[in-house]
Length: 235
Image (tube, rainbow, N blue to C red; front, side, top):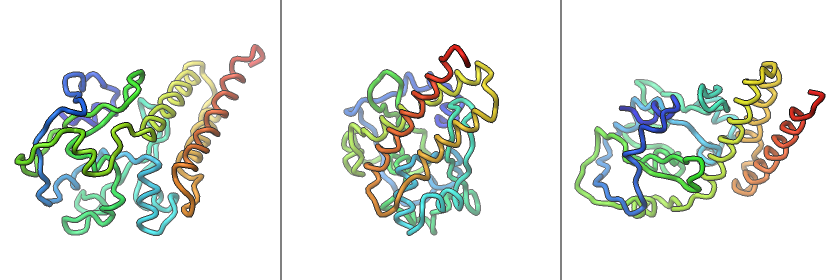
């Protein structure tokens, strides 16, 4: 079972028996074979991932998106999704030989491997699960907590929580708009605004977190405006 494919279909229940605590243990040791960087057509990038890769490659976020990704509206999430495209031989476009060419800036989903994480509405924090693996050794024992520390990933990743929450809120808003038969051009207005403020409105010479929080505030105000507009008796 490919957990990420099931999640993209909206089947969150597949994880109910797989969720781990920070003190849950697992065994894994990367052997540098590069197999986890091939035939992985499920890598979705967050704004922070794109910003870090862009900084590493001396590009803008827009250039990274145009060169290495596909953007579409998630079938279940109903929000813009940035999907990392495969390169030659179905390998990650950043894989050189068996090495990651953006290792210090690799997407968090890659740094987490063999763990995956998900934000479940109402839980208030990220939850982790162990992916099915076909590579590496199973000789070193880790807890989820120690694995996160190895890669400098916060146990309470406020950014990930904010990012997941805004996607959930906008997804619910857009689904409600579609259920009310809001015209397609209006939905495209929502999607365009969401995409621009999530993925393009960043200066590569400024701190990501400050800009991200500013952009989230803009999107929050926009959604409140749209909600008030559609709640008006005249609409």
